[in-house]
Amino acid sequence: MNEPTDNRPCIVIISGQLLFAELLSGALASHNLMSGGFAGSAAEGIELCRGVQPDAVVLDYRLPDREGLEAAEQILSDSPATRIILLTAHPSHDLLGRAADLGICGLLPLHGTVDSLFDAIEHARPGAMVIHPSFLVPVTPPTAVPGLPTLSRRERQVLALLAEGCDVKTSAKRLNVTISTCRGYVKSVLSKLDAHTQLEAVAVARRMQLLEPSQPV
Image (cartoon, rainbow, N blue to C red; front, side, top):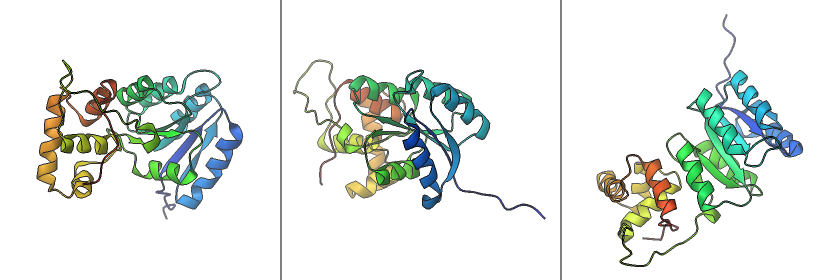
């Protein structure tokens, strides 16, 4: 008789704050998630991930031995499908761009709520990024700036939803438009930003400071 298989997503925690890592690891079961263990450094975390092949990793940006993005790069090199949620206290435009380029699936404040973290773990997926609203700095670019693409109000809303990690179906529902119409907006955004993927479009928009929180419609 075959042994029952545990189909819960496996999560690894990597943080220099071992008490936080241990407590979070212990709380996973209450959210129908399985703990793959925790590590206090990048080197230990990378080896742990190689051994357990987790579905997702909660990773602190500042680790004792190296930067969290360096650890993320190695983890994704070993297992590209791994979803990585990065925790940071002070996000910069450079960090946001680097995280998007690398393929980080979630970016959250280090001292955020546990509920927002578990929500990010649930919704994060490769090719998109879940970003805490506090990290989305509203920037209204001046008009007629040479080299700066002009996006319509609807295109900006679509772009903001892409930055939140929404897919086309979810974005269409949020904007109350058809999926076909939403695909058209996405295609237009990609064209104007000279991007080939939605993730690349978000990264380019951050560098140009085009992102702003989605507005009610």
